[in-house]
Image 1: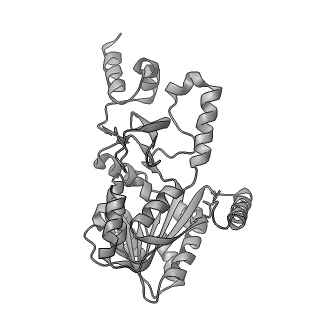
Image 2: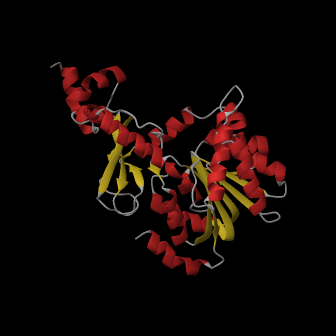
Image 3: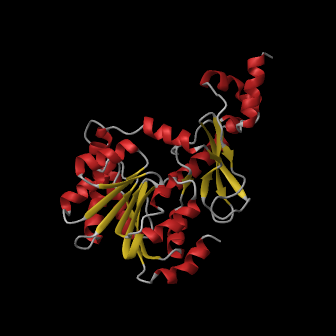
Length: 341
């Protein structure tokens, strides 16, 4: 064995590739290298060490497991990378204008309608992970009376939102919102909460951002069932390949969590939100060509949602809308403790 292969096997062992010998050829062709990271041994939400492996994937030269907690049923990645690695990755791989202006336009219109309906006159709106402000620009056209703030991890995105649309901005991750003293009538978190490594910090933060009686709008993927079915089928059809799979179909490796809708609704209830609704989310618009399949699927999802009286959402992504109770902050304390137990 060459010295290079010896060191590569050590790297594979340290970075979760088991058995390492089975991954040696893969490591040579894919440029696996030492990357610092922390492996989780317990659920980041409830602390349980009882978990079930859903699948595995390669990300930043680590073999990462997607586990489901046996206690609270949250699905989570078992690997955490340093903030500087993740921040640089997102800054360098930021979506282009076509993505925001074209591919997400249906999503933006749907969320903008919800914001416009929920916000009071001259209400305060916060878009967490709002990128360059394109979603809030749609809201602004519908409701020019609203006071809009955009938060994003990217310095360039925040600068763009301020320069092009005149929005107030708060640049940074969720922790940058800890010191915000005002509350907002509507808080939007579209495709963002699964990037936050500290879920307990998320539960603590939300009640401090949303004003009593205010509205929280969250958009998340809704692909847990097809992911589980695909993984189960793969195990049956090719059990000999289980240990050398490098991806999970339908799952984005950038995501740290899959939030089951019932889990998320329960946590929001515990921290003082009520009247929680789930709606089918409009899909991304594919670049080029005329859309036929996606509109039909969305129509079917809306029909299923209506027939089931809101209990069943089958769209690839869903919207969760919750109202914060009118109770004062002191009344929320027991809920916060319960959520963090």
